[in-house]
Length: 194
Image (cartoon, rainbow, N blue to C red; front, side):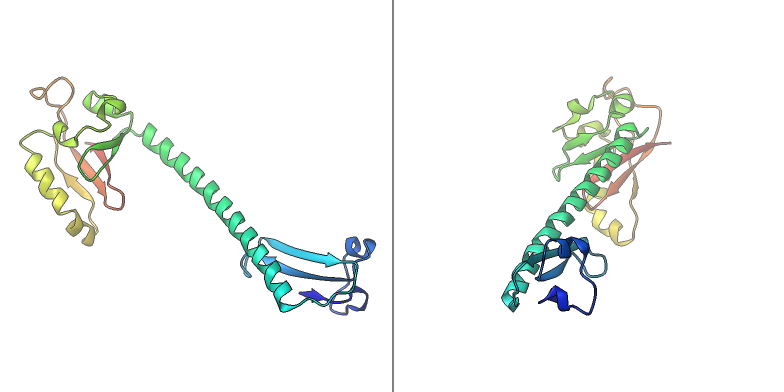
């Protein structure tokens, strides 16, 4: 909105702050989206001025930069909150949750890995997940990995494989079976005990 002379303005009355400071001319632009703006940015002068289209465009560009900074701040804050929630869920889950590189090596394992397979998360990082799968099940696991794309198309994400080998050695198998859960967007896997 452009105001050439505040004393002659008929669309609205000037804010007292502007009147007290002797403002004559000014313009205001919206910061952010029209439907849900972050605020208004205004420039004012005590001298009479006719603002050019270039002046308006310049102020709007500055407001757009400010809106982008505000938006990035909001996104960053939401991402932090989401990461905190995710970390709390993963680190306190009574399931082993892990992420893997495309090679099958662990990039992360939740603390429950110690109880489930007898290894600390730090011990698993960089290790191949295949060494914890009984050799009788390795081919099935590899086949299921190759079929993940097909499973995604059918909206399935549950693959039964197990048993896992624990830290006491390959001949001592856990007394449970479970399900591996794969999330194809980011190679996240979790193991749920039955």
